[in-house]
Image 1: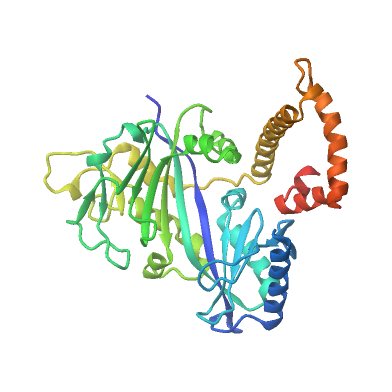
Image 2: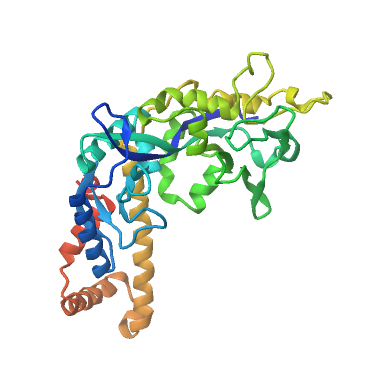
Amino acid sequence: MLEVKVVGRGVDTLVLNVCYADKQFQPIKRGLAEDLQNELNLLQSAARLNEAPVITRWTFKGNNLFMQEKGSRGQWRWILKSPYLTVVISRGRLSRIIAQVRLSSEYLWSCEYLAEAIVEVGMFLYSMFGDYLWFQVSEVDLCADVVGWDVSQANWQECFISRAVGDDGRPRDDALLIDGPDVVRRRWKRIETLDFGKHTSPISCCIYHKTAEIRQKSPTKVWFHDLWKRNGWDDASEVWRVEFRLTREFLHAASIEAAEDLPDYIQALWEYCAGRPGGAVDGLPDGWLRYVTPTQDTNRARWPVHPAWEVIQGAFLQEDDGLGPIVRVRKREKNIERGLASVIGYLSTLAAWVGGDLAAPEVDISLVLRWLYGAGLDYLEEKERDFSKLVQQKQKLYGSEEQAS
């Protein structure tokens, strides 16, 4: 039987609120600077006119941010995106929050430490909004990737128990224990995802088949394989992810405000969610969610934690080194592979549509490419477009300049 082992742990999502600050770096309510509003409006107008995102002067980790054609619902009038982060910006009239930044999973896992990501993003935001800012944690997702535990074969109906929660996201009473997940998702009759709590709840958890998710939905995330191999993955075993989502409501109740303090709380947050190894001070199992072994005890709060869940409880007792450039290289390789597949598919379709020699039984790809060269030049001339400039624009959009070099 395969040993239950944690092959990856970390922060998979981090969202920060951005506020202006006074000279003591305490948050204050102030409208967004007028000159910045004017610049953002001009960029958004250009994006709407072009019906496509436009490049901006702001860069993060060598990648330009692109202004999107539209804002989003509510206060966020402008949206800027890059491969590593997304920034939504308001005028600062409805609240003290002038912006919100979402760090990509790719970027977070490439950093050696969480503090490194917070500092780098902070330096970027200072360059964009000014020197006096305050950053608040809005949302954080903590996860552990595990091998040796097939959740689809677990007794999930009876042995997953979680504490009922109040409006503040904290447990009401140990007696109020909820059996099983709120939502069960299957693929070909096999369980692939268990959801505990609502996505909008102060705290929620999703347990899902990570290797299947990468294979079916996120093939560019094959760089996770490199991380797992570092920690003993055999390149074949199924990996399941346990992921807890903590929202602003929960973080406020836990007195977690400033982003700079978050790294010091990561282990404590995980233990609150999954329980402490060995249980609480009284020796009884704790945690917002846990997987247990049933006994004859009528008080389910005393049911012992299953050995597989004990491994998960200890996930953050150590840290993984970041993958750094490996993430970018593996993502680029997968994008090239997918791009080639798309190009071959389009070429074969074009050849079939054009017909004649291009659809002859003996046709090969070189003949189709020669035809494409002539037809492509005609198209570019008609549309008054420069192919080299299109390539450079796509390099900036997808952040591939540094990778290609």
